[in-house]
Image 1: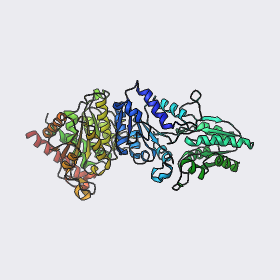
Image 2: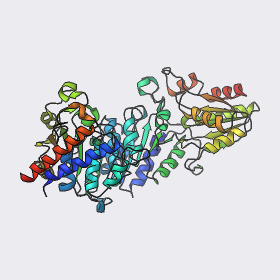
Image 3: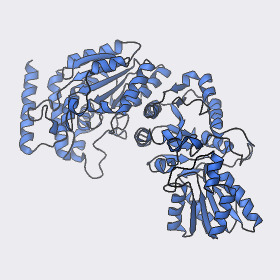
Image 4: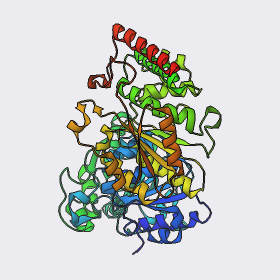
Amino acid sequence: MNKIPNRQAICDVLMEKAKDDRDIVVLCSDSRGSASLAPFAAEYPAQFVEVGIAEQDLVGIAAGLAACGKKAFVASPACFLSTRSYEQAKVDCAYSDTNVKLIGISGGISYGALGMSHHSAQDIAAMSAIPNMRVYLPSDRHQTKKLVEALLQDEKCAYIRVGRNPVADIYEEENCPFELNKATVLCEGTDVAIIACGEMVKPALDAAELLKEKGITATVLDMYCIKPIDQDAIIRAAENARAVLTVEEHAPFGGLGSMVSQILAEHCPKKVKNLTLPDAPVVTGTSAQVFAHYHLDAEGIAAAAEAIL
Amino acid sequence: MNYKALSFDLRRDCVDIIMAGGGGHIGGDMSVLDIMATLYLRKMNISPENINDPDRDRFVLSKGHAMEAYYAILAYKGFLDLDDIKANFSKYGSKYIGHPNNKLPGIEMNSGSLGHGLPVCVGMALAGKMDNRPYRVYTIMGDGELAEGSVWEGAMSASHYKLDNLCAIVDRNRLQISGNTEDVMHHDSQQERWASFGWNVITVDGHDYDALSAAFDSAAATKGRPTVIIAETTKGYGSSVMENKAPWHHKVPTQEEYAQIMADFVARKEEALHE
């Protein structure tokens, strides 16, 4: 089992690129440790800005740096970054069109037992609703690396959510197909299309294996790009399937499931089931326990797929 | 140049923009105008010719609702065309909206929601320090705006990073939309509050061009900490019709009021010319 969390992969890319790019600046809100960015702060102190526990200031400062030519990477717990500094994300980043990459760490219910204050089950909905804001939930460390490398090439803002814990590899270092804003097709089938993002991609892929044993074939899409979402890939997958299942570590309204349902209702009406967290504070537990509780694991996903066919 | 006299022409342009668009924030426009004019006409290294120069001075209008005053000054400096603004301000499909928008030349950042300018300027000042650039960074806040917590987050970080290339200005007109600032939310003593956050504090008559100019020079000469200029101003400055009257926060003059305001501006300009 891989022991490198996606946040570590982000630090590795930034450390590597900062060698030759003095304009890369990393900002934290007393969060360098939890963001795995302490090595960056130690290696590049002149390109690291500690803001303290002040998320509004954090994102405003990042936007000011970006307006003066810096490539600002903000890393702060997703629960705070996507709510406390929401207006700065909207006005200073998206509306002012500044090159700020907002990295929501320990996203979703990563801080399992810490309670709803520390969960970010609303961040996809919130960030996606902002015009000019892009939203990404990479699924493993290799894809995270590719994503950050790609985002370093542009000058637009984006929100990237990663979880706290290491997640199993889906891709390999030398075999990680990636095209920015295009979903990755992990397998293809004709019975059900499973569209997942972030940490839900691996259990979705495992569910496809379980379904295969029962003679059910599934397409699995890694929809790491929530916005702009890969509409063509969704329609293509739905056209070839009898039903569609979405899986996400997010509240039921305004996330991946809502978006997929919206697109399919217009372009390819199909039976769609959204697997999500509840519209309620989640049960106390580790990530794995919480996922299992809400059937967001391979067995639960497979069962849901079977049920809608 | 008699800036005081000029300021009443700029106020005329500002009120004309409001009349043409049928709305605006006239009271705050009048109180902030002399501060902004001092920066743009006397102090800042910024012009239509150098808007892409990385060494240009930076300005963010944190009290973004004073946009009509900003339009008048940007037009006077040649960034924008006054007649075009008057023809289109607030009209359907217009690029001239009621708050700063950086799609227009000369405007660095969008604002409108209060409490955003200072943190953004902290970032701009940090970038200047990182790249060893000579530019200075300015932001103007309203006094009612100071109730926003993000202002004080910015105040903390500016002082922590010893940003002596940053100068914040408080347009201390003592009125906000609901009435006296001290009744809505207590803000005195501004001097003690900013000093306690580690800032160099200068208090000045916000309608005195020479005093404002000297304050900006003093700020530029202050090393190791940011400067805040508490500019004591009069909301609605320039006409007895609106001076110190809270309802004029965003009132649009009637034709009679407009005539009186214009007459007051002419008289004040005459006074300034003979001072």
